[in-house]
Length: 379
Image 1: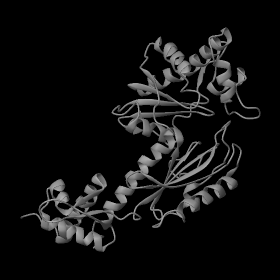
Image 2 (image 1 turned 120 degrees about the horizontal axis):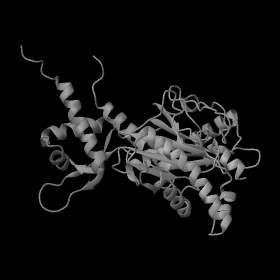
Image 3 (image 1 turned 60 degrees about the vertical axis):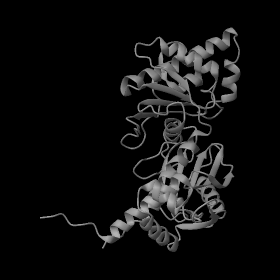
Image 4 (image 1 turned 45 degrees about the vertical axis):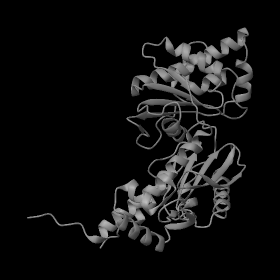
């Protein structure tokens, strides 16, 4: 018995998806160029372009080919059909961006928040920024991708308040806050995971399937990338290294966050690291500066040793406001290099990596939404 032939509707939807993907790659093309790019006949492509234009997914740009032969019209994706909201929630405030299917930022808004904002204020600020961004685009927001400087429960998208967390917004629920402001899914993860995704896509770990990203800033965090995937753990709390035991200033085992307390490098009344004080204490080649850098490098090295033992990475990437200091990177690499299972240590390259990683995911989601719109619905 022969297999059933695909329906005409299915064949058309497959062609439409090829056309959409071609224009995601090349931005604007004539029907003849799309036919060459996809390997589909000009007649079939012309019918697809007509359907997609009638449905509002494509537009005639008004540009025409020049030179010999028949004049061709350039087509592109409609400008307002696929816009995502990308948000960063951190002690610096809430930053929102409108990002199109090509990853370009077409709108932006931000608002101050503070380290101890609390859930209600954080929710209000998040909603205000989202509304401001939505007001800058014409076609609404198809999805939202949120980066938070707090652990995120992978099952619910809620922020998780852990003991001694430096950024206090309680169990903020970005999915609930943004659900009525976007048409599609709200995707939430913590900032270190997004930063690792950015480094793995377009930074120093591009092409590396197994690496560890360590964030050293006001807060402390780690992301483990294995076989090209972020390992988030059962609840999404993998990589919370602040309370991992390591070597303290006197050599005794203490939680990593306590190393900074002993050295007097935490903000008063907070577990947040005082970055300016740390930079001042580690600057130069004086005896105290060298000793402090060494103490911090040993403590971080203990964390790296644990990460390497458990995940077997090819590379360790260091990011964060003070982790990127060249002297600090060099000292960490020197101390860690003497450990039994050391791997190369390098500095992160991507600016604002949490937003960059969230943008990358937003583009992926927009492309999926667009291509899905070309597929036939259930019969």
